[in-house]
Amino acid sequence: MNTPSLNHARVAGMIAVTAAVSFAVAGCATAPQSPQGSAEVRSKLSVLQSNSNLAVKAPVEIREAEAAVLLAEQPVGTDAALGEHRVYMADRKVEIAMATASTRYAEGQRAILSQKRDQARLDARTREADKAQRQAAALKSETNAARASAAEAARNSAELQRQIDLLKAEATDRGLVLTLGDVLFATGRSDLKPGGNSTLDKLVVFLNEYPDRNVAIEGHTDDVGSLDMNQTLSQQRADSVKSYLLQQGIRSGRLLASGMGETRPIADNLSASGRQQNRRVEVIIKNPQSANSKASTN
Image (cartoon, rainbow, N blue to C red; front, side, top):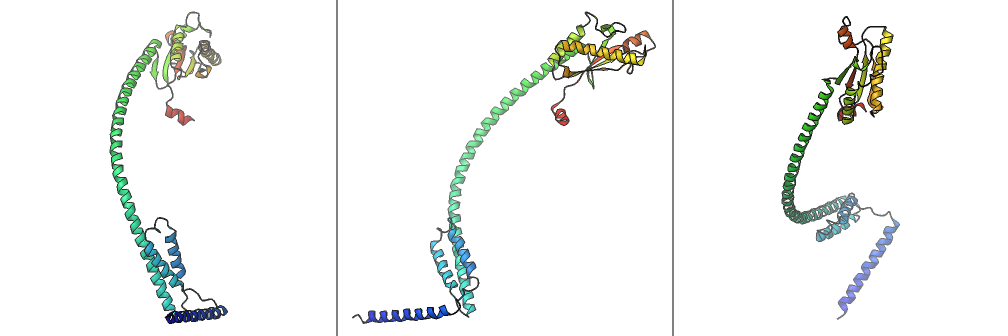
């Protein structure tokens, strides 16, 4: 009854002996090489096996690919065609495993995306409703702000015009020009007459109201006397106006005084009335710089 078992044992023993002899003989010769291309197929399989998303999606196909790659890696001696065929079949198995895993992963992702899409649609509807409410509130707020801003601008414009009217200034490209006649000064003198500062006091009020406006003070004379004397007198008169403004608290950095002498007459000097017009101090209240012009000068 134990004869078959004994036969199997003998056969197994003979196979083992044969394998050992073959291994010993092979060890004495050059180590056999795996067929060309088998390393690349192994690399492709390793990439698939290391991908945590794909490796679990096609376990059967990956095992079959592993078996085919192991077979393809076995040396075939001089039978290059057999090695090439095994490598080709192993590559196909790896491709099948890759395609199967990718397809199943994509199907799973599609189901997840479908759920996310449904939730996203619901969230989008909620956001749209909230956005519409916010836009309505913002529009109402902007409308109210625009109305308030327009009203404020109108009030500011009216107040500016009122101040200009009080000063009796003229709007020019240089700014607001306030012309102070020779009533502020005695003939040939540069000190301000007592009690003649009412116009300058209005100017002080304006400059305090609009602190972003600077002032250029220009002294002018008629042509009576020498050029040097008129130049000096015009500078002194401009300095007197500047000094008065400083005494009233206007910051010095806002004021520039210049003497023009007799070089810029506004009337002829042939008549007494013409010379009187030329004897003057012009206060140029410069227009405020816009944000863009300030940035361009920096």
